[in-house]
Image 1 (cartoon, rainbow, N blue to C red):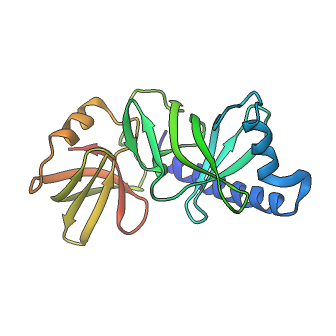
Image 2 (spheres, rainbow, N blue to C red):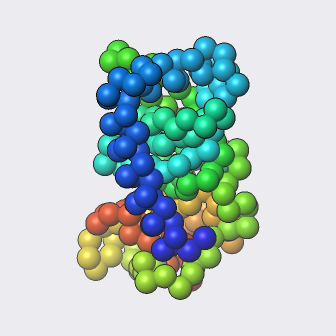
Length: 209
């Protein structure tokens, strides 16, 4: 999947999630709490404090993951900076999720009668496990700098560049070659890579070069 397609899907997903939130706030059918409450109470899509479904998008502004349950309904799961995405025993940022990924989320209820996930296990990536590609989209940019710090646990490293410090995150379907390159990085190493800017200080890796 090219970066352009990914960006378009995420944009559409944000609109969908906002619409979902509006429907829930109208009180129709009890909203998100009733839907998830029924599922977690023993429905086909959930088991105890877990719920499975297909990702429809990540709304970074409202910090919600759109998840379509087996009954066809889509709900918004709240997340925060501590929420982890796990694939093949490696942790990644929530922004690594793509529309179409099949996941199982660990759910916790909050005091304001909403639901929060602190852990999302990727069961089947939408792209399979073939690794990422650079693609031809203009959204992919070349980045170079010096490694400032490593976070092997969460698949992150910070990079000092001519434009300031960037945080680089690995996608969960990273290629084996790029995974090995990441694991071999040390503070002070010079790095060149292709990546997609998620915001002014965050880049998602596409490929080392």
